[in-house]
Amino acid sequence: MFLQRRQQLFTAMSDNSVAIFCASEEQVRSRDTEFPFRQDSDFFYFCGFSEPKALLLLIKKAGETRSVLFNRSKDKLAEIWQGRRLGQTQAIDQLALDKALPIEELNEHLHLELEGLSKVYLAQGRYPAYDQHIFAAIERLRNGLRSGWQAPTQLEDWRPLVDEMRLIKSADEVALMRKAGEISAAGHCRAMRSAKVGMFEYQLEAEIHHEFLMAGARAPAYGTIVGAGDNACILHYTENQSVMQDGDLVLIDAGAEYQMYAGDITRTFPVNGKFSPEQAKLYNVVLEAQIAAIDMLKPGASIYDANQRVLNIMVSGMVELGIMQGDVATLIEEEAYKEYYMHGLGHWIGLDVHDVGDYHDVKRTRPLVEGMAITIEPGLYIPADADVPAAYQGVGIRIEDDVVITANGCEVLTADVPKTVADIEALMAS
Ligand code: GLY
Ligand code: MN
Ligand code: MN
View 1 (tube, rainbow, N blue to C red):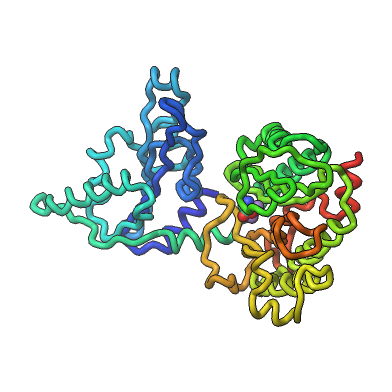
View 2: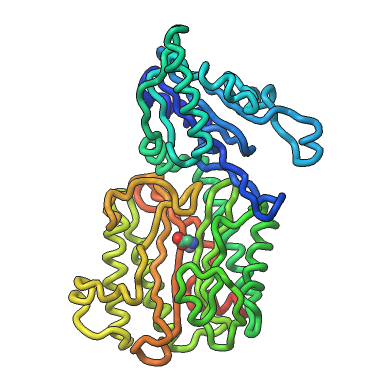
């Protein structure tokens, strides 16, 4: 998988060039403890190595290609205190490299690896500390012209090339994303079964994370959102500290990260296990829109097309329920719905929850092709002080699934968690 990706990038690179990828940096959490380490997605994409303090060089010279890694050396004492290190010898073998060098000796070796190349591909600015080492190595070559050294003269960002590669998921990636979807769904099902009036939002968060960890997904793919009542109207609410009240809907947006791939699911359900008639009506507007959008997904369709369908259904629904007044087409034209639906319909998903890849424009009109993975997540958020019938005030509803585009349609990766009123109520009662 990793070799194939390197080959694909080598094909796109110009001759006599190197693409440099940096490992993530460890982040201090408190004094001498760090946040759990999470590898840089692009670095990982090309070598699968999950240690910090590493650089990957993919070198194409005179038609020949080489993969060179700088990584931490074996160190008995450090490994007793901080954990195992792969070291250079094993790295060559396990990661299918041509060469591995100690990162501790970066400044002695890096310029020699870059010598004679014309171009450096680099995501300049992402890791300023590594940029400094790289530019120092280039400068050293420039100053060594009398020794016959040749310094690269061109700098290019590899992101446009790599983002396009990552946008199209291989069968192996889809398999991992399917698993991330299944684990995420299991977390949501557990939350539905556990919810009770009087619980804290963070207690549902705990149920979800328990399910993730038990299934081998060691971290959520992003900060878990559990918002009951009008907390659901705060799009990135992660405080999760309120007590859930009788009559509240609770919105949960949570996804597991499984072997680096993200799941991203939202479900909204009644804390007491039973939707009120008004809650069910508004919920069904969002559900109808979400299902209609997913039904449209196939090669050639776009997130924009699906969102137009969503707008029609949701604005018509809000007019019928007395939440909005006026002509549906005009309300859409004038974007009056943005008061209640203020985010996009969906985003690319993969190694990053908001994955890389060009959308073509802000409306997301890019035609979908087989292998693209996206979320579909329409929502309606009615503030507590909105001038609408009282039963709809302070209600936030979002329904989100992850989808991969197939040859003639799509596969929903997160279908294992119920989303109809009847199915949710049945699971909660079970
Ligand atoms: N959980 C982030 C999102 O839905 O985009
Ligand atoms: Mn989400
Ligand atoms: Mn999402």
